[in-house]
Length: 69
Image (tube, rainbow, N blue to C red):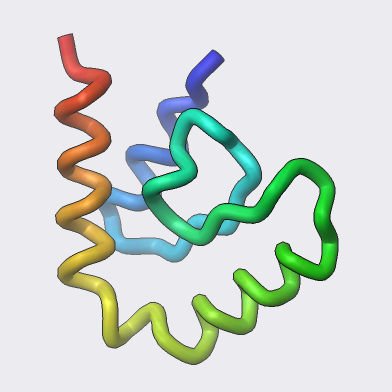
C-alpha cells in the first residue's frame, strides 16, 4: 500500500529517508531494515540535499503524476 505522505513531503522539498519500495526513486531510499544504509542516507541528505533540491522536486512531481488518477 502506498503512503501518499511520502509524495507530499517530497513535493514540498523536504528530504524523505524511507524504505518504501513503491517510492524508491524519490527521496533517500534504504533497503528494508538496513540501519547502516539508512545512516548513509541521512548523511547524504545532510550534506547534499540543498544542492539537489530542484531535481528532487522534479522527481517527486513525476512520481505524483504516475499515481495520479
